[in-house]
Image 1: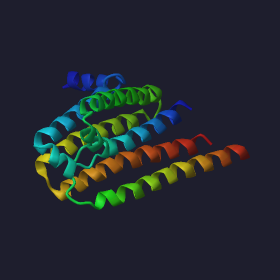
Image 2: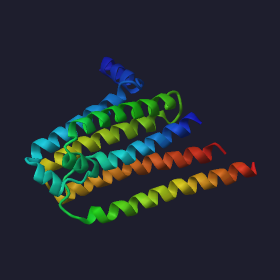
Image 3: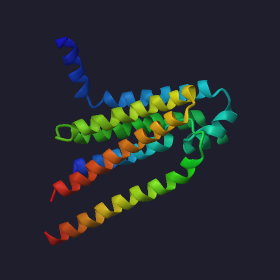
Length: 144
Length: 59
C-alpha cells in the first residue's frame, strides 16, 4: 500500500508524465468516436466538436489529430512546469485530469447516445474552463 | 508572473478542450449556447485584465 502511494505521489509530481494522460485521452476519445459513430455521416450530423467536423469535411483527420496531441502535450507540460513548486500546482494537475476524463467520457457518449449524458459532458467541459479562469482571476488579485 | 502565464495557458487549453472534445449532440441547443458562453468567458478575462491594470496603476 505504501509503495502504491509512493508511486502515485511520484506521478503527481512528474510534470512530464501528467500531460501524457491528456494526450492519450485525446487518442481514446477520437478512437471511440470513430468506432461507435459507425459512419462519417453520423459524425457530420451529430458530432459536437466543430474542429473535428471541419477536419472530417476536409479529410485532414490524421494531421489534425497529430497536431492536437502535440499541442495538448506541450501546453500541459508548460502549464505544469511553470506551476511546479507553487501552491496552486495541485489545481493545475486537477484541471489536466479533469480534461482527460472529459475526453474519455466524451468518446463514450457515442456508445451511450443519451441527451442527459451529453449534457453532463458539456458541464464537465465548462467546469474545467470555469476553474481555470477562476484560479487565474484569483492569482491576479492575490498579487496585489 | 510564471503562474499567471501558466494559468492563462490552462484557461486556453481548457477552452480548446471544450471545442475539441468529441461527444454526441442530439440537440441543436448547443450551437446556440456556445457563442454566448464564449463571449461571457472572454468578457470575464477582459474584466480581470482591465481591473488588474487599474489596480497596478494606482499602486
